[in-house]
Amino acid sequence: MEELFIWGAENAHWLWWALGLLLLAGEMVIPGVYLLWIGVAGLATGLVAFFMPGMGFDGHGLVFAVFGAASIYIGNRYFYTRFKEAGEPTVNTRGGYHVGRVYSVCTAIVNGRGHVTVGDSRWLAEGPDMPEGAKVRVIAVQGTVLMVEPLRD
Image 1 (spheres, rainbow, N blue to C red):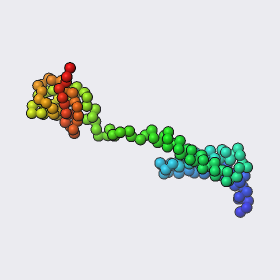
Image 2 (tube, rainbow, N blue to C red):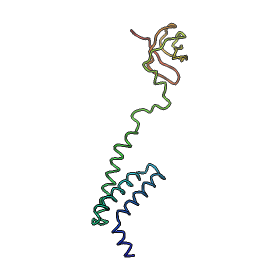
Image 3 (tube, helix red, strand yellow):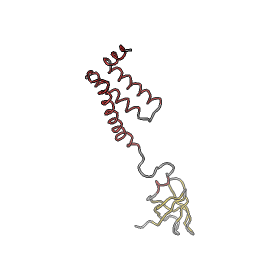
Image 4 (cartoon, helix red, strand yellow):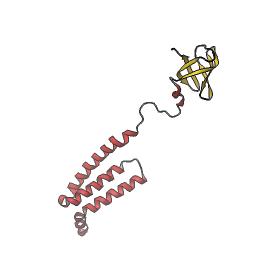
């Protein structure tokens, strides 16, 4: 058993590299658990252990803790925050694309309801009464209904 400890102390870099690769493999099996960053810290600790073999396991453990904390911080700061959504999600809100756009009335708006031409289709519109052919600006979208106002020059 003592020979095993002696071998481990002499080949600590191999143990750290094996631990790092094992953690990286674990990230492939269980993604999103920060094993990637801890695995990178294990590989980096193996590199330190290769160049500084007399440091001992206590020193290597401290180096691993520092590298682990630093790699998790860097990974979280520069990789994960990039994908966080800012503001309202745009999934299933395509009607918002029309807000601020100008369309023409294809069926007169009477009693607050009519139709406007959007590309090659007609959309239901609500707003003040306007004749056919009038230009309107979309101010809001409620479901499939465009809320419009007369275009002011």
